[in-house]
Length: 222
Image 1 (cartoon, helix red, strand yellow):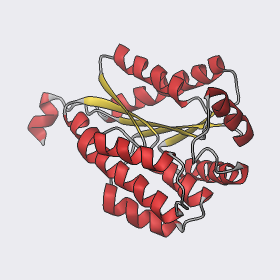
Image 2 (tube, one colour):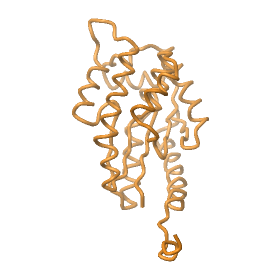
Image 3 (cartoon, helix red, strand yellow):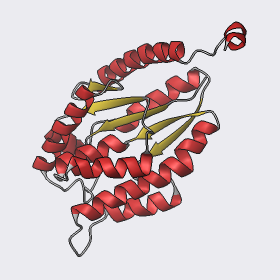
Image 4 (cartoon, helix red, strand yellow):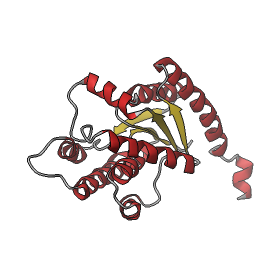
């Protein structure tokens, strides 16, 4: 079976890590080898870029710089880790992908979406996730959860309006996509996991049908 690329998206404090582990366990029980990634990051160079993006600087980090760093890290990750893993028949689970940039740098920072589209075309081409699970959480709640984990990084300190705009964009993107599903992350973690499990079972069954190997007879007819 052709391996799949599944992405978990959401604001800070949405609970992505536990959902990623749930998806990983689900796929392993189905007999798949699994590779987990995160953005920005996932390769030596991309992790170095992550540090540049996340840390505070004694100078203004322009929104253009932030955007270009995100796509530089994404390009490294896709070409040097995600695609090779899928070529080796591994399923890949991503903690964030391109939808994050559209929501954060597009919706949150207000960068023209045509600029993001051009960068996406240049760095990713037609490569995209097979399934995106968006964990929806109110920004104030998510930030409170993130703050409970420790000191906030530069992006997490961007302010409530930034995250409200990012959330609005996320929801618009999910509504417009036939490969993205929204999960209410304001529920208890048990209920979130239950909802994710239902989505996974339904999506996986559909994926099996869509990617069913051709029979010998079908092959001879081709």
